[in-house]
Length: 232
Image 1 (cartoon, rainbow, N blue to C red):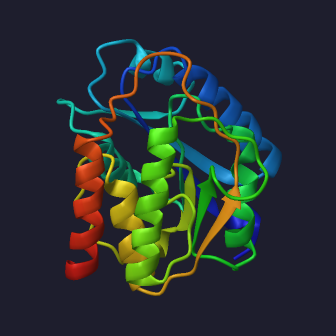
Image 2: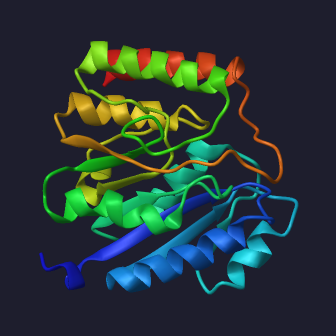
Image 3: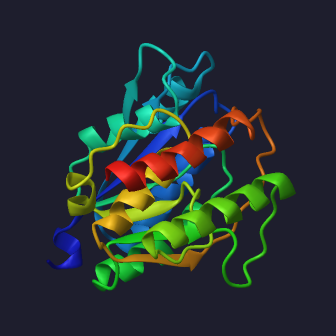
């Protein structure tokens, strides 16, 4: 299908990100405009108590607010149900990803060289910053996924992704939290879809506080990898 006839859906989960969400959306819109592809930007506000939803609505994008705080995985799944595009991308709302690098993720898909592309913080020579503990955990999870599924990835937990809609149509996702990325990757790899990585920049958040708990969420991610592999 010609690129101009495609619709790109960008799903952004947000929870108390009033300091960054506006900048992420405006930069994303400018980037997509340069690409010249039809698009929709979908914000899933995970019951924020700050101005995240209000700021998003002011950017003239689609905003859906959850009635209760449900977690990143639930927010993404809600966004996937709303997405109408042939290509679906996800990006975090805390400003850690550069919207200007979205074309790097889209290129392999538009060239039909991949079904899903992950923006990796740990591949190539792109400078990144992040907590060592989290980086070590990601490498362990990525190694586990490689052993179980054969998928060779360096950043299984990256929230910066692009994929064909048919990939999601073949998945039954159940995660409610941060383990959503692992569940998606394991199930996609088991179904033999083509997964690629591209190096991306990453900056540790400078505003707000991450809700990720390295111990609790780390255990959930570990269990998600195992159960997704066993149950498919």
